Amino acid sequence: MTQTKKQVKVEFGNLYKPYILAAFTKEQLQPLVDAVKEIKLNNLQEYNYRLAGNIEHEYELYDNQNLVDHITALYSPLIKLHNDKIEYEKEISFNSKSSHLKLNSLWVNFQQKYEFNPLHSHSGVYSFVLWLQVPYSIEDEMKIPQSKKANTNCPGHFYFSYLNPSNLGGIQITNLPVDKTWEYKTALFPSTLLHGVHPFYTSDEYRISVSGNFVYDIHNSLGSNP
Image (cartoon, rainbow, N blue to C red; front, top):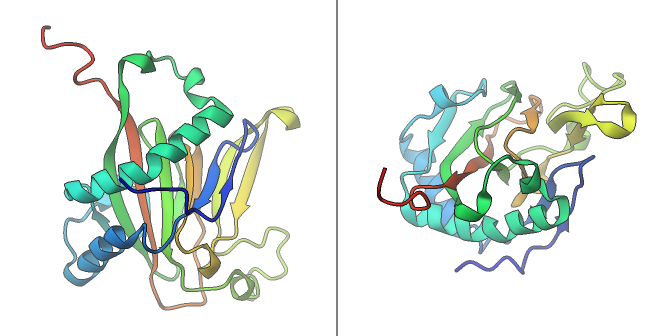
């Protein structure tokens, strides 16, 4: 089973910042890197019809059971950390004791210059995004002419949007400055949490990210009889 104790960082959120950030090692992610490399060469099962992204190259990874098991082993401890800290599952009207969480979707995005992912949410209970390759620096992105004088300078950023109880219920936008320093880092969050990705402008290489959703698996908890 994959161990997560080699992660270099875990940053906890709370109800005002309902996500956690963590970092994996290259060795932990090698099976995923290999699977993504194969897709990049062969353009296997397209996944665009299931996704919100205005991105040309999006492909399914879920048909690789060994990879699904590996990702599940990586993220199960993070889900426990998230729930222990934020107690998100208490907010779900569901008897979680009669079931367990299961990864039920997994895909990779090869985002190109000017492409973007609009504000959206996922199905499921928990979701994640994992950055494998980010071909730019935020400093370079924030110097582009159309952004450098803006009061919200955010090209290339990943962002969350949610209600902030400390601001009279106002909308909170949290921009994460995802760039080459974020490779092998991940964000884990409730699937309903709105999020998106701003376009980048300063590189012709792919920005490669992997995402997945965890759901409650009740297949065996209801018994074999109707």
